[in-house]
Image 1 (cartoon, rainbow, N blue to C red):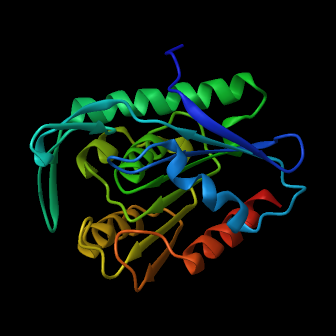
Image 2 (cartoon, helix red, strand yellow):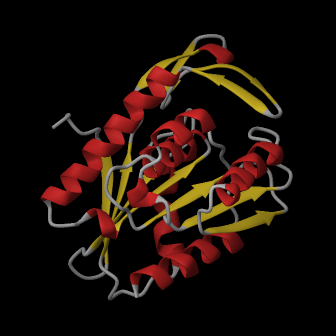
Length: 223
């Protein structure tokens, strides 16, 4: 098995029966979403292990080659498109699969593992979840996009054709435009995935109302 990324882990409630693997955005690290956990309002009986991995550091072309934590290289960006390094995206997918496999080894089956991600992390999560060979519990995709619909169409697995998705975006996002988020939404709906879509009057961030909605959606699947 591929060596797992370093990560922050938080066990919420009783002995973990579920896992949430949560990927941060470009230039951040695993600590970015740790404060969200207590705000989700999950029941203490849920038993959830939250895993917040740290992305490797690499030069990012669209940022002048500056070295920063990133899940893959972004070569260029525009309001409605991204040119990315697909090989890097697939390396990050392999890293997510290694984390999933580790949870399997710790007694958590894929059917109780959620993948969550913000911005670039969400792009990796979309790619990883929709092409995972075993059925996962669900996806939380925040202020993000699908970097390659062609890859998804090529490699989407029957096991995850009914994967529940919670997706949310800020209507004032000037980093990942709402148009990119809606493109992902429309693709998922056209492909028949069960999707909950929310928009909030915010920039490239998360808000308390959104976090509470995530908590409600997640609680419904932990019951």
